[in-house]
Length: 311
Image (cartoon, rainbow, N blue to C red):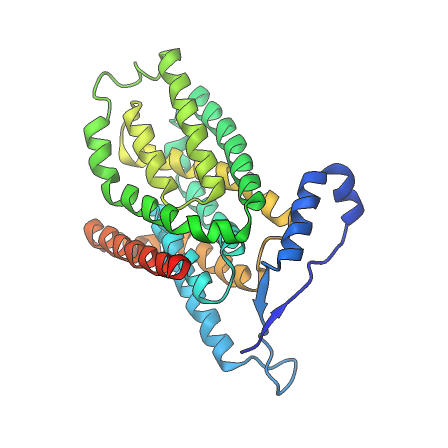
């Protein structure tokens, strides 16, 4: 299969220069670095016929996205499946990271909608403050990613994947060790403690906008440490915060032209199906089995990325 580098359409370019010069500059750097690459899906037999290997690739990415969407709905970890799949498909690291965020975002939205009953019982002030810092942190992290040279990101991403894998592996233990066990709501009512939670969430959101692997586990741990109760209530708020972090990141990635849309379109459909429909299936699989599979994938991908970057 031949790889084709396609120029990003320049529709509305003058408006982008006037309204968001930083994004325009970043987009130009992305184009010149050639990080957005897509496979040529059409075979030599005609423009309407799909190459067999492209069909297999598309189906594989769809299935990966289904599983990733379901994992994100349950606890997180979908990035470990989508990001390495895009790397193996030939997408450069920075574009693969941006495409992963865009591909999984609709699935997280569908999961948040499924948690509406739990969200109605969440403290309004707490949720609003956390959403605002999540939007800010996601935007800053996304801009940092797009300003990172592709060669540098390729060398740092193995450490990010390994760090996220370890967080995913030890997240429940850390949550049990550090979780607040006092009266429900009393600590969150304390302004100083809530300010600290906002600061922690801002850092988590910044990391989420920049890379995102394991960010859901970090949020679950932080919310538990600062006094929230009940897994489904915590996970409901976690999905809303994940949507917030990725919303600004998705917008920035799209405006900067950093998305490999040929891959993203297939994986968006899979993530929505997984986030909304496949959860009931995965609920029948024991949690240790799911977590163990994700951890193994994360470690294998870390080893692969280290070998690729430093081998």
